[in-house]
Image 1: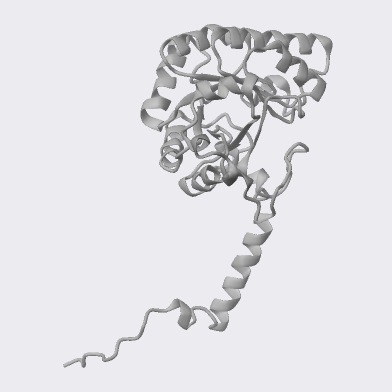
Image 2 (image 1 turned 90 degrees about the horizontal axis):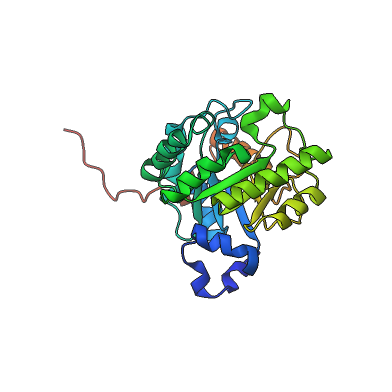
Length: 287
C-alpha cells in the first residue's frame, strides 16, 4: 500500500490554514486539493493527507445529477459543508459561493460568504470570475474571510462561454485572464484556481501572480492541482474530462462487490455464521 505521507514529520499534520497555503507559493510543497461532499469521503481524504477539500457547487452535477452547477443553493453548500467539516483534522476546508449569491454586489458576497463560515463550517470561500470581482474579494478579506479565486473556465458562466471549453487560446483571452488573476491576487485572494487552459498559458498566469495557482486541466506549471474526488477514484460513470487521471477504478469494484452480495443473498451464502450473533443457549417457552 502506498503510504509515504506517513513519513512526514508529525508537525506537518496540524490543521492547514489559508495563510499556510499562500506561503506554499515560495516554500512548497505543491498544493493538493480534491472535492468531497460527505463525512465518509472527507474522512478518507483527510487521513490520506490531502491539503484542501472543496465542497464545490459541482455537487449539483456529481451528487444531484444536473447537467451544470447553476441550481445549487447556499443552503445545500452549507449542508454538505457541515458534514465534511466534522471529518477534518488536518485538511483545509473551502466552500463555493454558488451562482448568483455574490455577483450582484460586494455586500451580497459578504452576506453569503458569512453564511458559509457560520453555517457551513468552512474556513474560506471560493468565487468564480475576473477583475470585476476584485472589490468583492477585497471586502471579504477585509472582513476576515479568506478567498480563493477562480479564473479560466468558470462553470457558472457556462452559457456565456458556450459550454465547457478550453480558455486562453487567443492572445486577447490570454491577456484578459492574466489581468483577471493579477487583480484578484492584488485584492487579497490567497490562491487562484486556474481551469481548462493550455499549460503554457497557465504557467504564464502562475508567474504573473504572487499567490499560488491551483490547476485543473491547466498543466503541471501551476503551484498545485485539484481533481473531483469521483474522477480521481474512478467512481464517475460516462464521460470523464481529458485532464482527470483515474488513480483507482472504484466504480467497477463497487459494481462487482454489489453483484457478489446479490448472488450470495439469493443463494443463501450470506449471512454465514461469521456474520451472525451467537445463538442463545436456551429459548424461553411461550406460555
